[in-house]
Image (cartoon, rainbow, N blue to C red):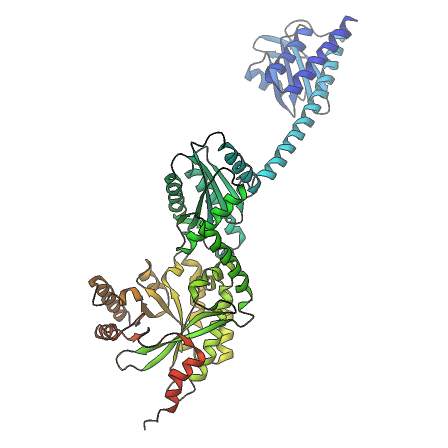
Length: 576
């Protein structure tokens, strides 16, 4: 009766120990097991390793594991000969008990086997509870954290924002700032290298953010290429300073898909006020981020109330832009380019305009950013290029205009698309324009993010007979590299240098330097933004080949161009 009562007491202790996962309780169980049979050693062996043990040194434990297969009745350890009892706990696990002295009798072995079964049941229960707990933990992690980066997801970010706003009613001594971080031109990485490379960049950005912020700050990923940082600070300027550090850190080159990229982020900042909703805070920071993009990307901006109206206008514009190409609202305008030495017409640059049904004629600055972000810029590029090629090809049939040139802008996103060669080739063939007369204008800063990804595309365009014109030359910081690597035929001096001629000595020095460089490389030069006769004459004196600007003609429709510039040449008498 005493043995049964004692065994039930032991079972209760065993169940209690395994339900709490307290190592001290587990050691206490083993002590009680050993005490029940006057033993010095007890161990629980699971999957051929010792989980818990009392009375054995590390060397003796290793010796015990080596004897698992044989399960001898005696084992010699440092202290002497250990009499053993191996009590099974299922097919793989064992309760081992040993003592220095007499062997275990039948009643003791029976008691130890009963204890082993109790421990076996307790371990199974513990494993089931642990498994369920881990499953709940994983489910909670998946529900609150991003699978790719491991950062808190939108749900957790919103919860933390709500807690921060609620805390303002208790303590308003600290400001809560939200930094909305968006990777600039992230879609281009996916387009050029695939989603695996995009994932690499996202992981890199998440690591940079966690490295830059303080331990108590929250870094989260909202979706796609959008990240969030929540900080509490006593000074408003701290948020802007942190944003600047983030921008600078992410700007550092990183190897993605075998290419070294230097990427940028745009950051919007909003501050929490009592009564704000988490969604409102995110929307405000998002609007400020778009303002940062509009200012040139790779910078930060802080929310103010006027941005909400701008955001509404932007959304409306983006929706309308989606149908603009199909509706024929995207129009090519042509601006003439003249040779400076004899003032003869050389060609035209094709420029895009949007004939909006309600807002009227929109200039590129009003919609190109939205076109780039949405991916519509590629369709717009090809629409303008096709229309311009068709009309220039028809004018080239006029006597004396066979060498008429066309310059057409190619956006960075179009350049990053490997399919652009196919589209351009189809347009060249369908319009029958002379490829040698076609120049694709690309701004210097187009290549800054990743020059490697565009090399193959540019070489493919060269194989079609096209050449490049580098627009706004001198405003970027990789000019000479482009001239070395790409088939450049024309440099276009940025209007900011032309406008300073005669007023700013530095502008004249820059213009002269560009012209000297171009002559050494046997490149032609177009002066952009020529607005008066003095600028035209000075550029001609400096040796510039061509001029473009309001002095020669404003950008106008194809129909107006035909009347103003082509028709007079049709009517001109032929010189024998």
